[in-house]
Amino acid sequence: MSGKILSGKELSTVIREEIKKEVEQMTREGNRPGLAVVLVGDDPASKIYVNNKKKACEEVGIQSFQYFLEEKTEEKTLLDLIDRLNRDSAVHGILVQLPLPAHINAQKVIDAIDPNKDVDCFHPVNSGKLFTGNPVFLPCTPAGCMELIKLSGVKPEGKECVVVGRSNIVGKPMAMLLMKENGTVTVAHSRTANLKEVTKRADILVAAIGKPRFITADMVKPGAVVIDVGINRLETGKLAGDVDFENVKDIAGAITPVPGGVGPMTITMLLRNTVTAAKIRENANT
Ligand code: NDP
Image 1 (cartoon, rainbow, N blue to C red):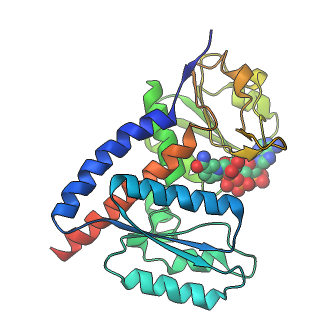
Image 2: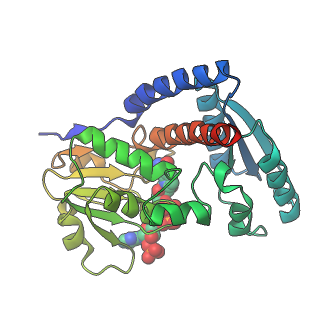
Image 3: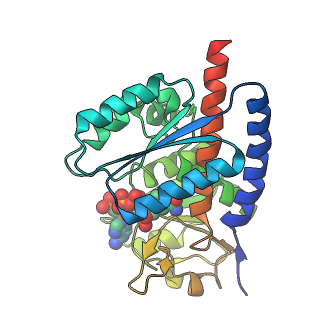
C-alpha cells in the first residue's frame, strides 16, 4: 500500500488564496507588500527560481521588483543596491538569489540586508531569533516542510525526527523548527556513522542532501513521514529528489513528491514572510 502523498502544489494553492485576500485588504489600506529580488549573473536555474518568485508575487498581488546584475558586478555595487532597497519604503522584503559569484562575499551581502526586510531569514539577527525560539520570520524551506508535516497529521511532539543535511539554509533551521514543536531531533550529515540505523529510527525524516534518490526504502521506518527537500537535475533533464520516491512511497506513511512537494511551499512561505514584513513596517509607523 502506498503512503499518503503530501502535495505541496495543492497546499500552496490553498495558502496562496489566503495570502491573496490578505494582500488585497492591505492594498486597500495603502500598505501593499513589495518584494525585491536581486539576481547576479545568468545561472539558468537561478533565473527560473527568480521568475517563479515574480509570478507567485503577481498571483497574490504583491508588488515585485527585480534587479538583474551582470556576473562581473562588484561587491560594492551590490551592497549599494541593498542599501537603497533597505531605505525604499515600497520594498518590504529583500531577497538576494544565492549562490552569488565567487568574487562576492555572500555573508557580507546577507549581513547588509535590514533584518526587518530579510524575508529569507538568513540574516544572523533572524537566525539568532530562530535559535532562541522567538523567530520573526520563519526560514522559507523549513517552514514549508513544517506545513507539509502538519498536513500529514503527524505531530512532531515526542517523535523521533531525523534531518539529513546540516546546511544553514535547510538542515540547521529545520532542526530548530522541529525542536520548537517538541520533536526529539537528530541531525545527520556526511560524517554520520551508520546513517541507515539513524534514519530508520525516524518517525519524521527530512532529506536535504542534494544527492538524487539517496534515501532508499531500506533506510526508512515503515509508516514514517518522509519530507524530500532535494532538487536534483538528472542527466535526462528530469528532476529527482533526495529520496527514492518510487520505492519509499510504498513503506512511508506519508511522503512529498519532487517536483510538487517542498518546492512550491518554499515560495509560498516567502510570500507569507513578505506580508509579515509589510505588517512589521506598518506597525512600526503607527
Ligand atoms: P548543501 O550542499 O549546503 O548541504 C548538503 C548537506 O547534505 C550537508 O550537510 C552534507 O553534509 C549532507 N550530505 C552530503 N552527502 C551526504 C551523505 N553521503 N550522507 C549524509 N549527509 C550528506 O545543500 P542544501 O542544504 O542547500 O540543499 C540540499 C538539497 O535541497 C539540494 O538538492 C538543494 O537543491 C535542495 N533545496 C531545495 C529547496 C526547495 O525549495 N525545495 C531549497 C533549498 C535547497 P556535510 O555538512 O557533512 O558536508
